Image (tube, rainbow, N blue to C red; front, side, top):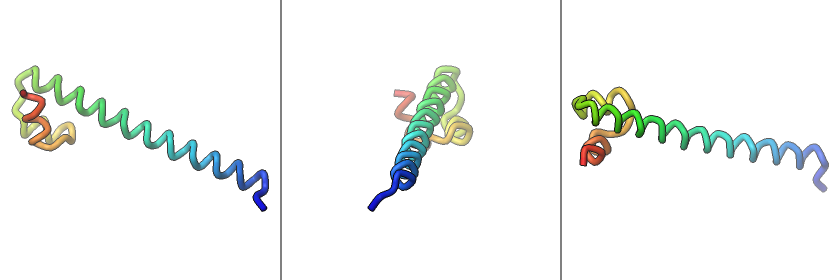
Length: 64
């Protein structure tokens, strides 16, 4: 039998997991936006990849 405490712990765990997933998505979006801005500024792709995290191939795709 589940106790009320068990259920509360499960809910708290699920909430924390959801928050972490949301934060990771937000960080990835911010890095992509930063990379796009640096591409527009004319920065070289290798430096952008090193500074922001996306791969060199991702940066080249952003350059279109």
